[in-house]
Amino acid sequence: MLPIDRDGAQALVLEDFVQLFVNAQEMERGGLWEQADVVMLYVVTFLPVPIDRDGATRKEFQRHLKSFGQAVGREPRTLHGLYKTAKAFPSEYLSGQTARRAAVTQRWVDVPFSIYRVCAETRDPQGWLGRALASSWTVRQLQAAISLEKTGLDPVLKTLMERLEYYGLMALVEKVVWADVPAPVIKGFVAILGG
Image 1 (cartoon, rainbow, N blue to C red):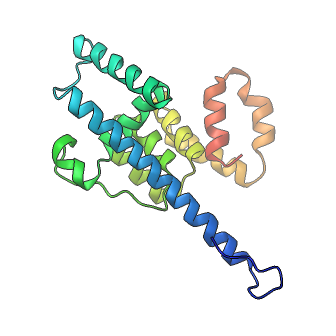
Image 2 (image 1 turned 135 degrees about the vertical axis):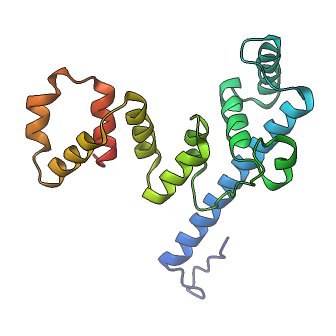
């Protein structure tokens, strides 16, 4: 923290506060990665065998997450999300124990943890992370893109919608066309278009 001298010995400027805020954000992101790594180590320690989605190991996994969640004051669902994120994007010191691929994932400090977490929920976390970084997507835009891909929306239609928005015609199209389109698809379009 910067010392504040009320007599004006040190004049604080906007950049000082911005730097403090950025430092706090980096510490927060680092803390989330550390929590994810601890959950990963906990799971690897108590369940060294692969987790079978339908078998007893899955139930054992859920039981351990519930017990650990009670001990640390976190919901098992939150811990499961941390586990999936650490598994999809392992740290260098964990990669030998838990990663299925030989490549070590880079954890970028300036990329929000939530981007990694959303990517970890997909079948291709690395691919989605690459797309999100290349497109500079926000979490909301990433979620919308994933949702659009799941619905199988035609990329040509997506491009058309983007052009309509660019020319300011989207409001008219929404009134005429969207009557029969499912709400999640509409929300996905609006999120990708930045609305």
